[in-house]
Image (cartoon, rainbow, N blue to C red; front, side, top):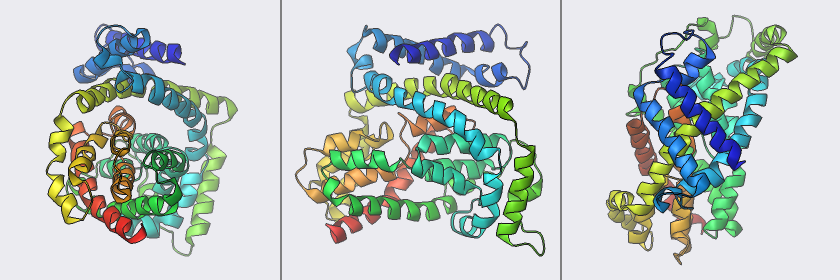
Length: 397
């Protein structure tokens, strides 16, 4: 697996360099090579950095700051192998979720819930379930593709990817075990679900998400976006009829595997380098500088107001989760108080956006959102979910 990862990242860097310079004006505008490898200078630098970081970590040469098990080694040996497997699985199953009528079936049925509560189309239910049952990155990939095909607006795609890309239950169990909350897992995960649902209702209605324009990347029939019901039809009937039409026109076996191959190339060669470069830089800042610790200091009085014991130590872990979701749980593990460990562990899951995986995948996807905006969304999510988790910790422990 390490050799496969370093090969993917190296090929991505070389092909991107060639396509973004020598072949820049010779590629087909809508071709795979142009879409995946003809990038702006910022993304080119990130992919070249990923090549450097990957080889330094693979060979364990150069500065230990880059290849240590807390920085590049964490990305290269732990997170990227998982993403390679998840992306391969997702590439084969995304067409089943997206091209054979499931979205069209569920859209009209869940629209009465998703639109008024979360300002989202009913079809986004599939993205959310994919994140919850599978992995947050799978939900981001579905959302990115739906945005690229014109079914989600820029605002809707950003809301879905930053609000519903929750980690799987299995990873939540790992976090709970790390903070010694495995015996209280029901209360622990209930706090995560409640805080995420409250944030999902509030976040789309406030800055910055409510200021993102409802612009579409591609034109599709308006009825497909609005999921409006024809007169005389129930949601179930309309969903079934539309899904049947889509299913009849769906690709055959050969086209199915062609689509899967194109998707896995897009995921492996576009997203993995971004996760490697941005994730390594973020974990270096988190582990070797006081940057995130300083940013967390304003939360001390906030934590004390909510009667969280050892507030000073807890505050150091709050912003560091933006680099990697697992870091807060590792740093808080030694704290003796159950409430503090409960709050920080649950908060790290509820924050959702961390650059070493989900955040990096969002930045590498088609969804147009900047790292600065991601950080602001992360910060506002923290401010919303922290009091809810703290209250539930006091009530349930």
